[in-house]
Structure formats: C-alpha cells, structure tokens
Image (cartoon, rainbow, N blue to C red; front, side):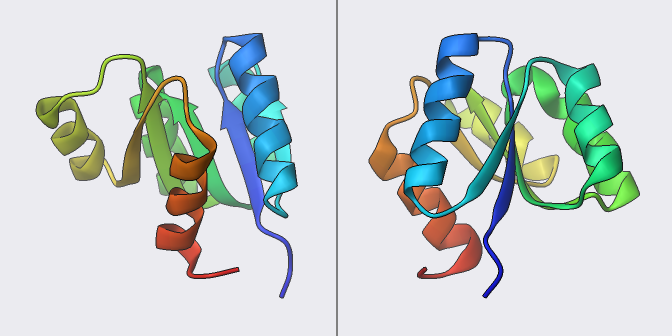
Length: 117
C-alpha cells in the first residue's frame, strides 16, 4: 500500500512541525504549509490522502474538494464545541480535532479515515 500523503496547513510553526513529525512517526508522508496560499500551491501540485487544516481552513477545504486534490479533509481548532464540529462535518471534514492535537487523536483520525495501517 502506498504511504498516506498528508498536508498539514497551520500558521503555528511549532504545531505544524510537531504534527508533521507525529505523522511521519505514524508511517505517513507529511508536508507542512504555513498558510492557505502555501497549502493551495501544494494541493495544486500533489493529490493528498488528507488535508489537515486549522479551522480557518473552511474555505481551503472547499477549494480542495472542488478540485479533487485531497481525498479527505480534517480541521483542528483550539476551541472545539458541538456547533463547530457540526459545521466542520457539514463542510465535508471527516473530523474536528482539538488543539494541541494529541498523538492518540491523530492516530484515531488516521484509523477512522483510512482503516488500520
């Protein structure tokens, strides 16, 4: 099976680097994007298994879905609640993760999105 390719889009450099490191440790190929424009550039070049974006990425996931450049999308936010989770799912996100993202939640996301490794 080909490795899962994941684009991590978040303006927080430390969180972005940490997520990329965790995803690589989980056997994925992960690339960082510092903002929406950088993410769109990467999405234009490569089809990703998953786009993991800050909650400000509602427009980004819509853009990616319209172009078919990410198989799945997930959002993350420091403030998660039922309404935000509902909005994320209505927008097509497979999950809404709370920041900071714990390794076990990232692992669960991958299992739920793709099945066991």
